[in-house]
Image 1 (cartoon, helix red, strand yellow):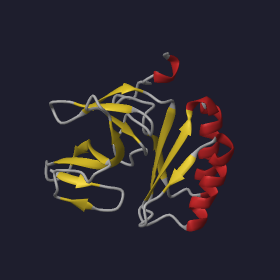
Image 2: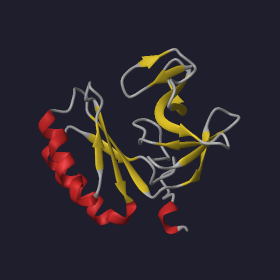
Image 3: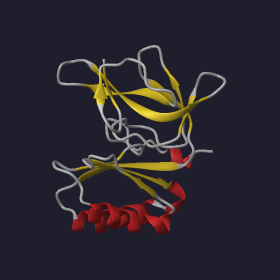
Image 4: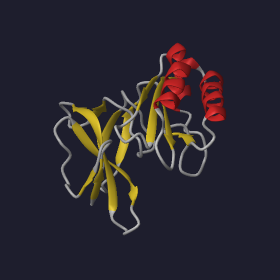
Length: 168
């Protein structure tokens, strides 16, 4: 199993303290790839994510996840944050990161980037509204057309909306 963190990949099967290994998919070699996501272990064995994953789909900072027997995870409680993941072939410039940060500050969003700056993660409260979130991303993408971005926890693998923001 390969493990990918925000800063490096390793062959370790155990994430460092303060992290949980979440299944991100299968690598080119057919091996499972896990991302080391900052998290707090809860008394019941579940984990509360303290950051939004860069590769893992389906969850965001604040969510509570339970690891499953098949190596995956299940979100048992959502904290109301939308995850956005952005990637570029080279690396994002400081100006591109600042532009995105400025776009999300009025929405109470947080932009995170690893030191290598090949991806960005945005965590924004769903209460900001999808219209405002999409407008911020469209404005930024117009300035950074080489970037690819997607919602990390809005759609299922088949493209259908998860609709978690309509429940409880």
